[in-house]
Image (tube, rainbow, N blue to C red; front, side):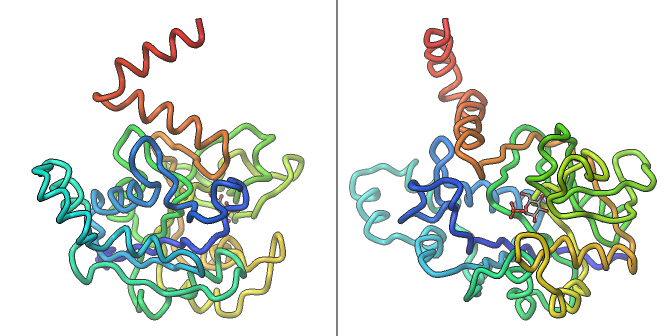
Length: 290
Ligand code: G1P
């Protein structure tokens, strides 16, 4: 019997240097795609997968993320007075239940592995998911739902992956496949940001994970790796030798908003998928490109 997954860690301490100057005074996780901040999509994705215990690993200058998930009494009162009940209800519906969100701080930017380790006391001794909010789910069931479904079949640890062109491997963690069964791949290991010449495959790790709590002890003794940072990938590599571990080739469409171009594309694609924008925005784009 696998222990159920209830918690999700969302690291939001990064500086967002790839999208400067937009992120100079706004947390990158609050950049909007169409009309919702990135982080809102990720929390909705977690909720849709049944995970309602959310742990944010924040950093300095990220206070606005806490405000986003709280009541805004002045705004709510104004909307109520003006009779804008639909808008008010949509804000109230999106707000997580009281006590379901926790925050801890990563005090220094020592890497993704270190950020996850900072959440160890809040996660405790149970399996948990991780979502990196640069990447959001587009069409499809959602990455976390896909990982949870796979976990219910095979247990252990999982990372979401997708195939990318070889020249892109140096931007991501890349897996070394051993055996494939359906959409699940057993691995001989994972490498962080390999150059194309040495990449063990074209399957790159998407920012969605489902891990067992033993990862925390590995992270605690983790040396700095690629880029001089404590890498989650390095500890997962060790865990892969000790426990069941699969890469899950997901069906969900991905929007990588961690770069300016990716963010622009995500806005266009998500707007075209929205019934309220599809027609007008589609016509506008057609005209522009004609
Ligand atoms: C991190 C991980 C990497 C993964 C990527 C997905 O890299 O270290 O393995 O492929 O997220 O977005 P980062 O983007 O933080 O450099």
